[in-house]
Picture 1 (tube, rainbow, N blue to C red):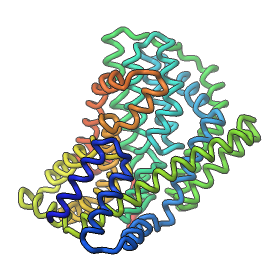
Picture 2 (cartoon, rainbow, N blue to C red):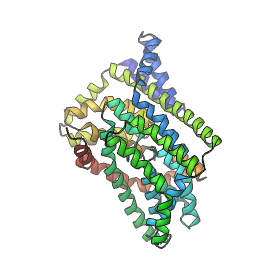
Picture 3 (tube, rainbow, N blue to C red):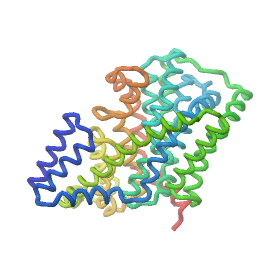
Picture 4 (cartoon, rainbow, N blue to C red):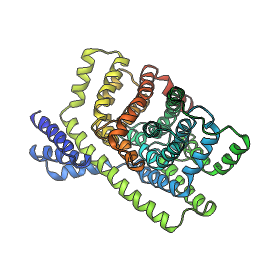
Length: 427
């Protein structure tokens, strides 16, 4: 127990010093291995085993598809379509921002990809239309968290691998909560826009909308292919990711003529860099999770929570408080890999569905992406919008209210997440 405490102290010290999360997790865990007399080769095997899953192959392909969609011009077409459909409402571009994120969510599966791809387009359009920078950045940051909830979702894939839960069920479970997040954010945008007198963007025009829809048909087919293929068992998540890349390359190179050799090379190199970081996080987090398992931390957590109550709603609320605190300091993928083995046994003991747990876990961690000091979405938007990081934090805080409201609603009413999985995957 003393070595576990020292390991945790070392991890916190490394993270506080700005050391990358995968290095912090790996070094602190390795110190535990060596000090406990366990051979270093055992640590290497543990990290390798953490990556030994066929489903993880989907990650680089979904990342590559996201990069290629930006190069192909999918994001611009999606934004134009959303603008023609809902730009007429008060604070029109705020609603467009959210609508575009919902559509893009069915393609990228990552909040950072949404913020980096659509974010630059959205913030510029809102600033040019007279919206203040804080509101533009805040709604862009908040809407990007929809991406990992609506399928396909990289965090849900990782949770499914770690918790050994059906990826298809998780994808189906994320659809209604993702749309609920969009509605909650739109209500917030409407209230703020009316109070501040933000303009309507464009008058609704059926001919304009039809032209935008015609231009966006091919991009809109992509989420149908990905999600429909997985949910109806046509192909696995990994095969869906490969199909997404092939589809984007064909549309971008043969139809839109926007993807050439250089764009493909740049997207591939960016994907290799991002994937390497993601896999290093998963491997080092698996090592740290082994340390926690070896010290029976999961059993201790279960005993502690169950000693206070056996009500599954209260248990889930307490788990979410723990996850919320972890989300302030730990990157999403690392948090899922470390937390899932700890909280899943507790949840299963009191009858919490692992699919429901996965949705609330990922949504909770998405809120962590909007909070310092980690807050990856905030850093990305600060860069693409040329806004000081502190201003991004301040602007995003009000939009945490509807997101936390949706999270609490999902905790209290599991059927919101479980409705589709129970009907699409009857047992």
